[in-house]
Length: 166
Image 1 (spheres, rainbow, N blue to C red):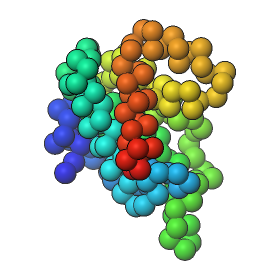
Image 2 (cartoon, rainbow, N blue to C red; image 1 turned 90 degrees about the vertical axis):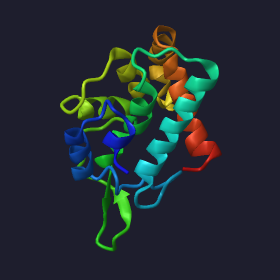
Image 3 (cartoon, rainbow, N blue to C red; image 1 turned 180 degrees about the vertical axis):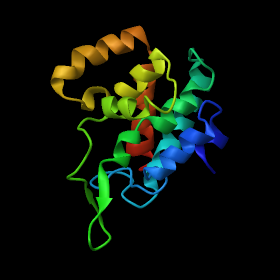
Image 4 (tube, rainbow, N blue to C red; image 1 turned 90 degrees about the horizontal axis):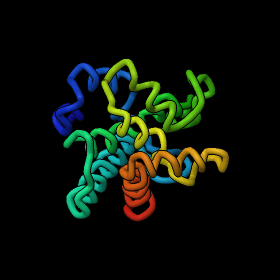
């Protein structure tokens, strides 16, 4: 199943680009959760499902109905540039990355391929919550005040990675 089949906000062209940069093949991490080939997609789908579940259970209000799926599916696009296979076929850190960063990098990478609302941008940008550098905490707090779904996005990511292990 491809992203454009899961989320109506993701075009087939965007999906083709995602496949071309390894979205369906890369691991979600090489040190923590989702270390296997294809786990980036599995992790992202799990985050999307958890965020949609929270939306349904708590009655979260989003600017667009499909935003929970979009945010969950695309929050870690940065990882497509972060990992490469070494000469032994093992996943390793990419020493020739195009840029550093995480949530901000995902937003930048997506910029030319999909139109995001400000709420979606903030949710993707700050999905790491307090796992970001301490200097980022005031900005994270302001983002949660502006868009409470930033907090729920972080929670969905934690449920998928820490509770479900993907």
